[in-house]
Amino acid sequence: MTAAANPPLTGIRVLDLSRIAAGPFCTMQLSDLGAEIIKVEQPGHGDDTRHMKPPQAGGEAHYYLAYNRGKKSVALDMKTPEGREIIHRLAAKCDVLIQNFRPGVMERLGLGYADMKDRHPHLIYCSISSYGQQGMMADRPGFDPVLQAEFGLMSLTGAPDGDPIRAPISLTDMYVALYASTAILASVIARKETGRGQHIDLALMDGAAAVMSNLAQYYFCSGESPPRTGNTHATAVPAAAFHAKGGMFYLACGTDRLFRSLCEKVIERPDLLEDPKYRTNSARAVNRAEVMATLEAIFADGTREAWVARCRKAGVPAGPVRSVAEAMESPELKERNMVVTVPHPTAGALRMLGTPFKLSESPTKPPTAPPLLGEHTEEVLRDVLGMDAAAVARLKESKTIR
Image 1: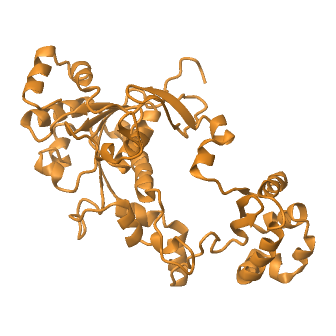
Image 2 (image 1 turned 180 degrees about the horizontal axis):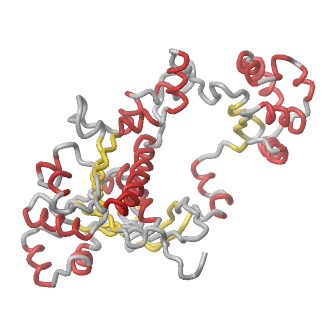
Image 3 (image 1 turned 90 degrees about the vertical axis):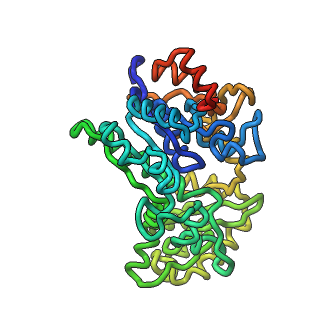
């Protein structure tokens, strides 16, 4: 990487009208890669996640802090004619607009894609909704846990003999954010050929279905729903959490080669490979209960640290089952710069996750703290739209901005 290299999305400007998780997580990724993100929020209230407390730091909610680093906040009332005109003026200066209001809201404001595309033909307009912009479910509200329940993920999570349990992370939101980032970057490339933007219609429902991947294919191939397997794996044996002295660790032997290494180099039981019930993964899956009982007894007789060390030395995937606190303080994350400290105007030195992007020829943008509500309103109006002090003062007087 040369000293003069810029982040790869330098020069790309995004008008971010999204809130909660999927949209903000998408734009945070684009920010990490160098895009300028102008986050428009409701005056006096802001992104709904600003109110998801406790915990908090410097009065800012942890949920909001998680998804909004590296952005500029503009507090603007889009319900006023002046506010809507500012959105149009910003759209003219931006490459991308992203919003995740319920279908129909932006249209009623005169800011839907049909309203935008003729006035701003260059604009890439990304809409994220629960069930899509049209269709039998389009008018329904939805949040990630509901989507997990409706489209199969929740049915597969939890103990085999217990109730379904939702994943604690908003997985549907996170995956749709990744899909949105990919679609936006693809549209930026396509615009180089056509000169025109386009509409991206992303539904949490579609994302919830898409991430089922091999589990959906299990059903298509067998005609049956995959079994709930808890901490084990439906087809790979052994892939499970095991108890040992000092705590639990997770072991994943997805191939016969790895299982051979486990037997020969880790547990020193090459005799197990002579038993037809242990020889192949298919056989181990059929005889899962016996295989697991044998390994559980072996692992219970040693310490977690010793087993993990032996697995790693043998090239067998394994790791300790850690708490969030243990994971965030781990030397591995620190070495990869995945935990960073940034200055924050009210929280002081704020610890946050870093970006996972590691590019050999282009740097990512140095992390900056999530903005306070309306922190950059005047800056954006002045520097992006060229408004003078008198024009800004009039907008304040009309309460269009705060």
